[in-house]
Image 1 (cartoon, one colour):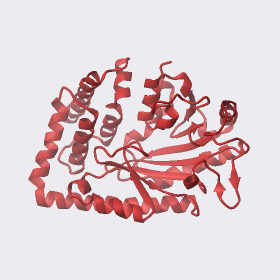
Image 2 (cartoon, one colour; image 1 turned 60 degrees about the horizontal axis):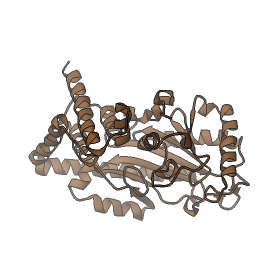
Image 3 (cartoon, one colour; image 1 turned 30 degrees about the vertical axis):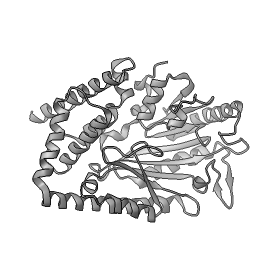
Image 4 (spheres, helix red, strand yellow; image 1 turned 180 degrees about the horizontal axis):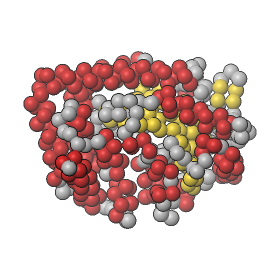
Length: 361
């Protein structure tokens, strides 16, 4: 089965438009709620019949939920690996749910994609509700997701304990079941070698950081995911407000680092960033890592107002659409590594060229 992205609301990536506060530095804000159904074994121990029961219960509930009206349910076992990888590249499913680490997808594994919302079904927990907003938008994200949660909870029997809160497969999620994260671009702190202090400070404040794809992924292109570590003992509002305060401080540190960098080594930085732009405009082959690192430079150049005419939306789209599965989707076939490198360079060249030409007119 080849996935039809035109049937998926906003392609599942409405956040790419670049809205929200501090969108030049913060790409997106994601909030997730882990929920399990009472009386059914956690996914890791559930039999296939139990997982299918969870899926059917969600199917039955969705038509009654205004916030998920128009959503599309995708059964992952019906998709080939390239389509599952495509969903992962759009941050709609985890590697585990998509079966990208060598294991097959579980029976009953699915994802529901709505307008700004999604639900992963039968991942580590029975249901993982999630919403993504562009820029720094923790308040808007949690408010929207709590609406989904209330509607769904009125239809499904959540596993809940009066003392411990929502029960989850992983003890660190017990309580609110909330994981809030911000995808942020911090090249100034990396180049001024201040990033180590900032990351250490995050951990001291109960937050953690990961790479572009969350847990288990490496940091690439100076993109970091900052999120809360635990959920027990604090309310949803307290967790997201704490994340908002800390990330706002990190943004200030990033702006300060950029000013210092520009004041002390402006001509070196300018040369480095224009070289990154020139490489992307004319390269004939780019690995994914090369593309991410050069795009980081171009994003910084736009933030420093060295390069005009490039929108945040275009920069965001380049980040997603230059990934292997997206390049293969555009070509209509699975690409080998070298083919993907050539296709990536061509896509980036054409996207930057089109935006530059439009800016001239």
